[in-house]
Amino acid sequence: MTSLLSRRDRRWALAAVPLTALTGGMLWFFRDPERTPGTGRILSPADGVVQSIDPWPDGRTRVAIFMSPLDVHVNRAPLAGTVTSMKHMPGGFLPAFNKDSDTNERVVWHLDTALGDIELVQIAGAVARRIVPYVTVGAKVGRAERIGLIRLGSRVDVYLPQGIAPAVSVGDKTVAGVTGLDHG
Image 1 (cartoon, rainbow, N blue to C red):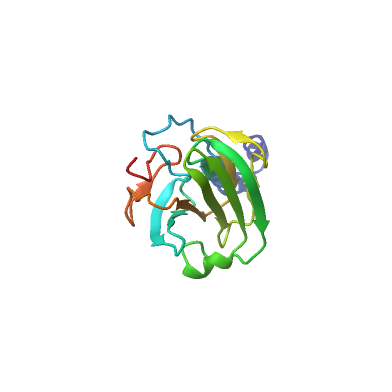
Image 2 (tube, helix red, strand yellow):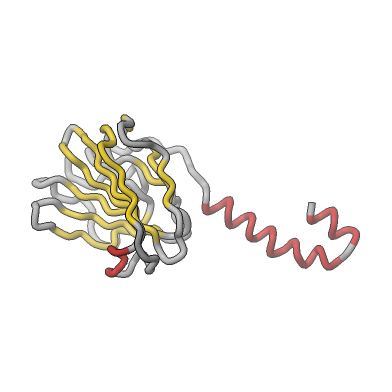
């Protein structure tokens, strides 16, 4: 449309450049490539970089994955199971790489799996203002199945059950549904 208008008036040609760049950026950001599930027992729910690995007092280990605006933002189930709860929690919009982002808006998921309860937390970032779940409570999800989307930069935390050691390290790049998070 803009190219047709630019033939009539050169000012439209100037508008076409940023509009085309914006359109390209949105297409890149909202991409959703097909993936073949990896071989790990627990798979990464997000594309990104492992920001932290923290032991919790209850014996679980939190693996926090930061997603930059250049990563795919479709999140996937770390393993097959049934969604037993999904709770939206309002909060702020600090940068997702900031330690204080634990108070940001988020969606807390619990999946009943062969390994027991798996907790997954989608955290909105400074730019991300919307978390879009694709499934509801009671849904059965397959390993690496798409479960939701966080728009424009954010973080996903997955809590490994007690006794399961992470196979990733801080700074490792992960691919949703492909990278194994444990040694199983």
